[in-house]
Image (cartoon, rainbow, N blue to C red; front, side, top):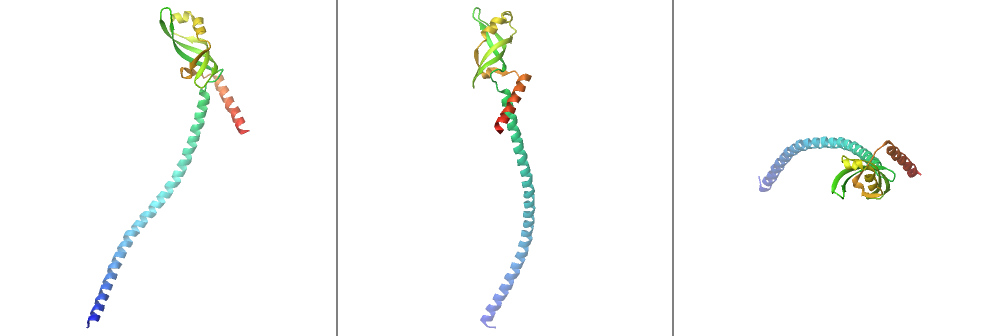
Length: 178
């Protein structure tokens, strides 16, 4: 055998050996990647079902937010103090002559309403103080046409107030639709 034949034979053996190694590695890669592709398919299916679940949860979340906003608006309308409403105001008063201090819970009508203040007229009060209860009319007269902070007053939620609020909501809804 000459040198060329030996080189050719060695190249042939090397080529066969390389093909065998390539075949072995290809089969290993197929097994490994085959398992990987199966797992990828499983994840895609899981993701697809999760996406549909997520879509339904997002729709439900949006509906709940809309309901919450509606309830907030209703609450705001119910708790808004307007002219003509009745409120209660807790005040600490003192008698100047003897520096006597006492607590009074006034029931009042709202005469005027601004963003931060209410002008109110007291029509009744409750107090545990004997002097205040003896001088009822004087205490009520003191609390006529007084401006107080809105934060000092709480609205009295009677049936008339609830009816008026619902009627206003209905009328505003009709006006909005026109």
